[in-house]
Image 1 (cartoon, rainbow, N blue to C red):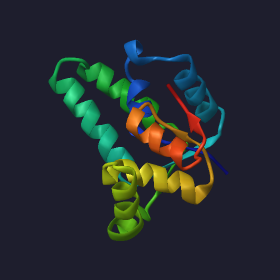
Image 2: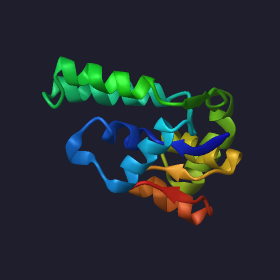
Image 3: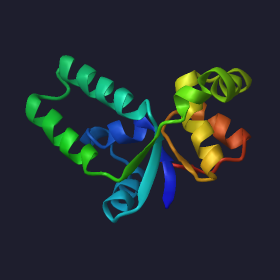
Length: 139
């Protein structure tokens, strides 16, 4: 059963010691202990992009990139493939009403649809989740 929706901001934060927080570390522990998170289909693309940029900017070396990929691929993250089908309807509507990117709306819509908390560090996304009554994890 899905425990929460995992935003890329939390997952990327696990790859850098200077972004560690006790709450984010506790979420990682939950996933390591066989809880499952859910994420929209864009999650692996967003995370991979953030890691590629971090390597390009010298924040990660090849060994650090490999460690990050090993960590992330071992997690129980169920990828929800409905985002593309909802992009021109629910996601666009939610993005417009909450002044979010459609990317962020995908995470929020998934948390709403599954009825689970959202784990995110993104302040704007967290504010929208609060307005819509979605419980929050992270930071």
